[in-house]
Length: 198
Image 1: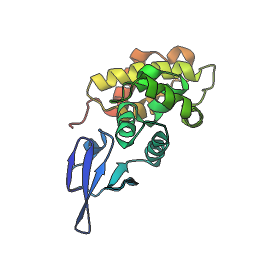
Image 2: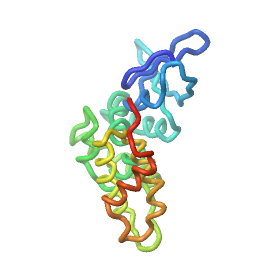
Image 3: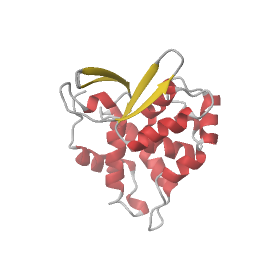
């Protein structure tokens, strides 16, 4: 990695610098000088070609799907990924949560409604599945929103918070265990206690 700033990374490949637009938190995962590999999507217009970089194939696929929605371009698609992450987006769409989708910069109510309508099937395939022992997915998603919000306020990025929640929830299978306060403490242990420096 040659350079980085929020939303943009520059990769040196055999002496050639490639500028990748990316979700806002992606650059924080790497340091200048690190060897790094990303999933890349290219959008070509009449006047230019723009490269977009993603950490996972899932993020890349969501970016592609978002760009199929009317009035959603590359910038808005990245804003959605930056604001919600892959899992957060899918769960928000399944829950018809326009307000959550609108948290993405540049996405208004009409666009959020269109995104939810067009990508409902895609989101249902990838949203967190129902859990055993009477714990329903809607309850899990409700707790997840509260836990991830608390962790991001503490300085953790959204994607790490969602990953930690997913790891912890597997050990909290009973309905009564899904309490935001105790889940936050468990996620903090999973995350190592302190947010890493940006």
